[in-house]
Amino acid sequence: MRPAWLSLLFVVSFALAGEDGLPDVEAELLEYARKHSSRREWPKAERAYLKVLQSFAESKQAPRVHYELGRLHFRYARRWATAAKWYDQTIAKYPETEWGWKARWGRAETYARMQQIDQAVTLFRMLSNKAPDEKMRSQAAARILSVQNKYFALSVRQSFTVGQAPWVQVQSRGIGNAHMRLESVPYEDVLERIGPQNQNLTAAARASKRRALVKEWNIAFPWMKGRWRNQKAALPALDAGVYLVTARTEGLSFHVVVLVNSFGIVTKAAPDELLVFAQSRRDGTPLAGTDVRVVTSEGTEQMRTASDGLVAMSAVTQGALVVARPDNENSVAPVWRGRARAQESRR
Image 1 (cartoon, helix red, strand yellow):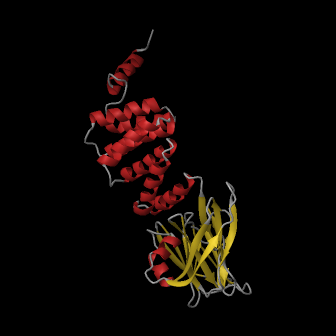
Image 2 (cartoon, one colour):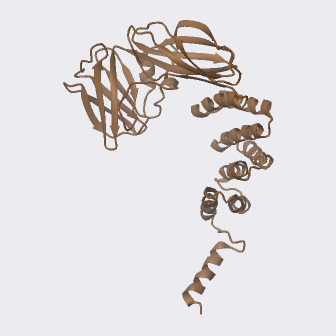
Image 3 (spheres, one colour):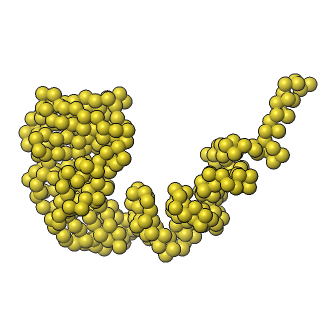
């Protein structure tokens, strides 16, 4: 015989769930949909999201729910046409919201899956120019090429010493040539744009209105059908400073920052501590009394190196920036957990 308390539990659960077996409270419906979506049980998640739209038409969560319905059909059901319908509705009803922009990305992907490449390229190109998020713009530029089975990227894995001939790494596939542009950027312009709201060196350099042209040239990539190419684009010997390298190809621009200094910064991060070491790049001499500023999304912390060139700080999140200034020269290095790394900048 069923215990009385268990029978009561069934009655209460049924009452809370409603006649369709779904919760009647909006927050519980959203949690129900999220849970089943994470389990790839898209039909259950879809029912919950549809009930949100039917029962809470004026909900503040409506833009997100429209987008999530498109995402369910794209990612799990693989029903491209149905996904496109929901993405189109999200864009039409909530064009300037976060979910409206994400829906544009999803719509471009549905074009690609349906082999409507020209439409996909057109929408990704719009995102690369107009999306409010810098990361989305950058990713859209890369996606324009990838949907056409092409690829292009610039990267820098180190900083360079004054007098050394620097270079940037160019990786490509299906690209014939690129126009290269090298500009110097006043360090002050970069530093004033680095803060809790921005730890992106490339974005800070691009925002400067005082960039000065150093060199322009073209670079060609010998045709190798369907194969990847990796090559170095050599730069002239440069004075200490910040430099922005721009490559223009296929109607798109790609950027990377090059740092040139007479001293270097090495950072090592552990779960509870950050260690920063400043030294001369010429002879390895530790630089005592160097002002060091750590910039994170939570704020900044400023200290000065000891006689051995070291300074220890409380732990910071990965991706933070360390700004050092011995004498009148500046340098910047990102923080990466787990091992020491020489200063570097990435696209």
